[in-house]
Image (cartoon, rainbow, N blue to C red; front, side, top):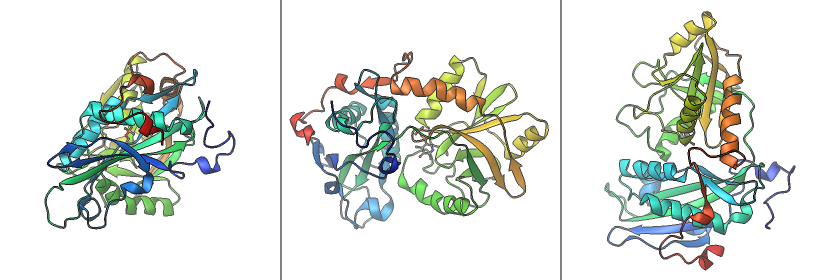
Length: 357
Ligand SMILES: *Cc1c(COP(=O)(O)O)cnc(C)c1O
């Protein structure tokens, strides 16, 4: 039995992203040779040069996913196939070499096995995994790179807090526009978002409510989470129209809501209609979903004279109560979302021994 990274109760050096694992799994890709064998290396080995496409042109994509320890002590991944598919789609959108999905899952499983000691005890959090693919060739011309590095980083995280958050309505800046890269998990979207997020924090709020780029009217995302709204009798979430990130948590919540018999639809949600719904007493709840935060209640949405203050937390609680036990292995897994890391074959060329670094 291995020791968790911090004793239960000492949560301070256990915060999100604070303590990165010392080792990373690295896989190189060369245009003429394809994907190379994986190796474990000190995390800094994967550093990309200042003259790379990743630094200069934002040519990098990433995933955020979690490994959990089940009640039997065994470690599993949550929906790694969906993260593999999304990383592939993100890579294709910005001309990075797509990694075959099976290889992605094999690398993530091998890395997690090698870092098993960092997976918190059952019920106390997860190992957050950050597979990242970056253009690492030093070249300033404008073309796809011929050398890329895929790396998996990791950091242990506690169970997400269920404290409600507040959003600032953003009416000038936009996160993504139709035809852009909004559906790709790429750094450029975060670069586009950072200033508005900082302004929201300066106003005492936690995140930004992003609206559509044309009319600044339709809800897109809640910071770096997908957004759901519960109106009287039904739940809505914006459709995947290319400007929002296709969240795995969003997809899981849609499946769970349908399973619970809650009427749910993917439709555009106009901010002014939410104001009207609130006046009619029909705005029940707003919530955000994402791997890091799971499901969080949004109890206030403020800006430009608008003030939405949904009071219910019932849906967030129901969704969390349905999702978390499937994620951490307490509940049955009817959808086949959990993948035991021991059940995934090692990636080609990677000796398990070298994974024990
Ligand atoms: C990653 C991300 C999400 C959430 O996706 P999950 O797969 O549920 O973690 C939502 N919005 C943005 C902008 C993201 O980058």
